[in-house]
Length: 140
Image (cartoon, rainbow, N blue to C red; front, side, top):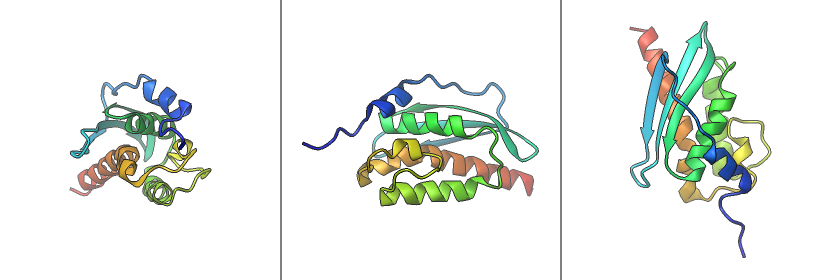
């Protein structure tokens, strides 16, 4: 018999209540039209550092847990460091690597099946969109 897709840790993370920020500096929304997952990510930023992160997720346990982990990890991160961390997390999830000290490593107790990787990556896509939006706004 194969292991269950959702470990107790993932279910606990998915059940956590997360909240939107009242006055974010940037907000990004990402949808997965194939399964209906939706992530909204809010960031507060000061002097190139994420000071607070909030958001909401509607979707499967992997998507909700992914957002919960990301919200825990973002405060204190520099905007400059985040693109490399996003890419590292994306690669490690795709390769099924576990134990890495990356944004979503806590979700990698067991390999994530390829069809479900998009669920875990959706919060990272929202982060990437938020960073892109900040970059565009600062160069206008």
